[in-house]
Image (cartoon, rainbow, N blue to C red; front, side):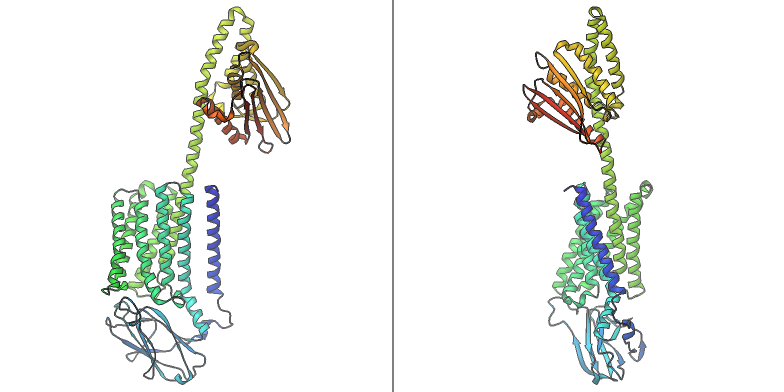
Length: 589
């Protein structure tokens, strides 16, 4: 399968998958509610208090690290419409009490293998009729500063309404993660198809793998996945995926940057990322630190990678700003960097409760798409330029071969004319006329690739043959059977075939021979046939013939195919002769 065809197949599959996921996302978010009543209207929120003061959830309360805090509320007198309470904890232990009696407790101290913090999770509590009108208290505690005092919404309603709420709030984050993951997979697989440079293939593959891990991080960071997957797996996968993203993104920067000063920094970040992964996991498994606290190191590494990646763009902006490819990549970088900064400021500075990674994930998705697309477009553009350059090189080679071949014929013809001027002036006169016709047709080397009427090519052939007949006398006989002449040929394609028949077929035979040039129609096609009864040759041994002769036949075949879609077929038998058939297809003509 051709590289281009496979590329189109991969691109089509990816586009179909991407559009399918978009439709699924739209249906999931905007058409998920199958009831007449929107789920927001069927949920109940209570007024919560902390230390006697009313608070609005979600909230970051001023609580010391490791300190337990309690929020309270009063359940309504009728709880028939709110059979389930739902809340989410952030690496905290959870204790729920009704009028001081503990009815729910969550702490992973006895089951977790590593670490000292509880895993974040969704909590569901059945609300029974005997709880109506009573005080409900929720006590939360975490050894982490970032989670101490953090409270999310507490919702009451049916299982269906609560599930709809989770999907509405967090499914976009998960779908962005799936988009990034699938795009990364496409980039990794398609790099070997679209790209030719090995370093570029490896760089884009590493970028795709980095996107895979970022997509995994987004999927596991989303709150939806926690409904179906063990919270310990979610906790480990989230942090490991982000560290792996930092590692592979550093590898991408090292391979993709062309600035010599940036490569050592990228390589250093690659080693630092690998060391960070090993160190964080070792400290976590030894119980000396939590991945949540150590995650700031990963974020710093990613920020440094972004700086190392972006700086060369702005340094080279003046030099490369006229390149559309460069500008699109800069736009992608700016969008990605801006999205990361916006999310960082909103989360850490303004304490805005946003789905983690939603903004930065979208920014990276834009960056990934723009970078890979621009790389592929540039590769295709360079391939086209290379194809044109290759064609020009082939054309130049043909000109050189033709120019080198022509002087021998000219010198031989002039010598023959000189010898005939005294003995046979009339023959010398005719030969000079034919020679001038030949030179007039072939002197302009640029005409080598021109499409001309066959009649013009035939006139050149006749002039050439008449000159050779004077030189070889009775040893050369040529017969013309022209039944079809209303078609075009690339100039200097049929004449060299006649020349080969004379030089390598008839003239190598002591007694000489005969050549028949025929044109005829076969269905919708027009055929040009050159048959000689010369010495012939073994077609399978054509590779052993002189390089200039083989290259000449190859160039004629390529020119016929590229210019008019014609085919060249050669059949020969040693001692019997050679048959050359050129077929011009009707639709091509």
